[in-house]
Image (cartoon, rainbow, N blue to C red):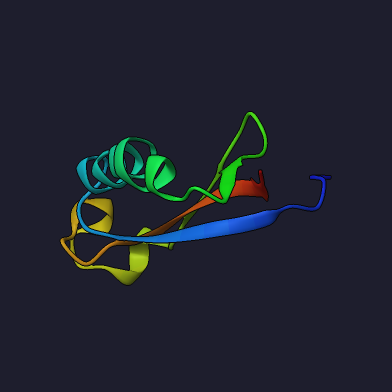
Length: 75
């Protein structure tokens, strides 16, 4: 079981793994430095993947949906 956190949820749309890697890079190089009141709260993030069967090209579909959940806490 995961401990309770406040989660910043980032929606990812696009072909894997490129779309996921691009959003991860932006989270830690752009978003995290810009949110002065919050900081990373744990040593892990959660990724949620939609069912590839819902897309004509599976995980390589340009509309494939994923989420990245980042635990944050007030400074």
